[in-house]
Image (cartoon, rainbow over all chains, first blue to last red; front, top):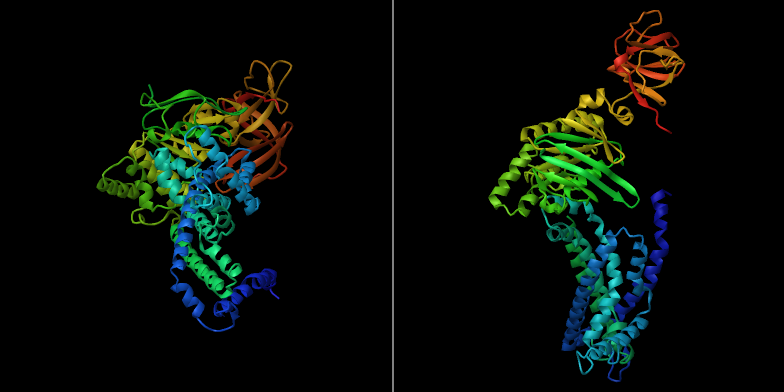
Amino acid sequence: MSATRRLRLLLVPAGLFVLAIYAWPTLLLLRNAFNEVGPTGALVAAWSLKTAADTFADGFTFELTWNSIWLSLVATAIALALAYPLSLFLFRTTSRWRGVLAVIAILPMLISGVVRVFGWLAILGDRGLVNGLLQWLGLISAPLKLVFNWTGVTIGLAESIMPYMILALLAGFGQLDRTLEEASRSLGASPFRTFLRVTLPLSLPAIVLAAGLGFVLSMSAYITPKLLGGGRVFVLATEIFEQATTNTNWPAAAVLALYTLVLLLVLLAFSNLLARRLRR
Amino acid sequence: MSYLELAGLQKRYGASVAVDDVSLAVEKGEAVALLGPSGCGKTTTLRMLAGLVEPDRGAIRVDGIAMTNLPAHKRNMGYVFQSYALFPHLSVAGNVAFGLEERRRPKAEIARQVEDALALVRLAGLDQRRPRELSGGQQQRVALARALVIHPSVLLLDESLSNLDAKLRDAMRHEIRSIQRSLGITTLFVTHDQVEALTMCDRIAVMHRGRIAQIGTAEDIYERPATRFVAEFVGRANALPATRGPDGKVLLWNEPQPVTAPASGEFDVFVRPQRMRIVPLSEAVGAETVRVSGRILRSVFVGDHVEVLVEGAGGQLTVEMPSGSPALAEGAEVAVIWRAQDSLPFPREAP
């Protein structure tokens, strides 16, 4: 056996793992999408497109799609606006605290989503930190509605995807080089012009990578929209859960799940294409 | 007043002093090399000049105008980086046009100047290439064109040839020198390579431990080194440990010599290998000639000359003889002679 073939054997465990926990369930999902639910609510095994037709005939599906995409776009944009300067600082700092700072920046990743949501409730709730402070300052008389609505979900989601985006940005900053910025300065570009003409263009691949990741994570997020949305925020992920558990309509849940998967694959392909063009 | 003046520049990083006290005056159109080993402060000096490092003390003036507190982008200095620092996301033309665009020149003028600059460095026709599609030498030329096109008040070159292979380096050396001369551009050239310094510059400032040890023409530096460090760093030199005889005469290899000794302290006598000659022991020498005797250890043919290693009472020394001189047998007892004026005594440094 040649060395490369032996090396390929190393892929086998991971391959089996992916097959068992991803490919096989996805196939089951696909099979389920062709089933129907009878008038009594019982599952009827079938090879029909009725469930899919019903799902896409329902205007609510498109409202959910729009909700999911819009929420993910806004959360990703906010997270990027916060993560980009922070990552740039982490990438460049020569401080001996760099390692510690990086760990702090990605610390939220290590905390359970549920715990994080309760943290946000304590901060954003009617009697939470923000409302308390604003009322104490006399800026508002009644508490602002910051949770159990889109605002709360957007804030919570932006925070939860930020650590992943910071890691993606740090990994993608490879082309950034202090000397290039110095060259730009020596050629007469102010620090701001240098950022616009050198730093930003060279970090675009990292931005596309991070934004793509943030968007995918937002689209598939369930805990945050569910708990911070207080039952008033409907997105694809919450609806899939609703159909599968409350309504026990597995075929409908399967159709929605596959639809979300296809949406994400299309968007991912698009962002990959963009990243590749930028890297040229 | 000189065109470019550095006065008492100092830069510290924590406890270590990168540049201690550098003062330098450069005339308009002159090319000066900052020559020294790594860590001598030459690059830091150049970076302070460009505004990339802020000096702790001292002043920089160009054409009588104080530059010390001006930000880098307002100094109008052309900087060629060791790594070239070409913008990978811009074409060759885009790289060269960068400085002109920042100066808001009209489009047509930029196009014309970029074309001229690329022609000057013999890269015409490559304007649409990306930097990574170019060879090292071509990248070097783009970096040079990019720095020259803005008509800088001073051109700064930071070890700009060190990433090229030997042959290309030779060609670029002459090319940069002729461009520098034809444009009459004041140039400061940082290098650790003495050949680069000797061939490309009007004057050389040898730097050592954050200070300028000596500044002068190539000949000054080579023939009349001011310090022991300069004698050791520039060119090759034999260092012969000297002792004082009972009558105060200088002894080299235990033989009295017509060499003037410093007033006090231990010292070594430095002699360039090509100033030495090997003669038979029997040959009589004049009063102004230094003569030591030893045995030929090895003789190596190096193409344009022969290096002969001679061992004697005080150690070893190397003599450089023109190739084609009569062959010398290893083990032969010979005398090594040189003119007394070619002896450079320097105090011995504490190890």
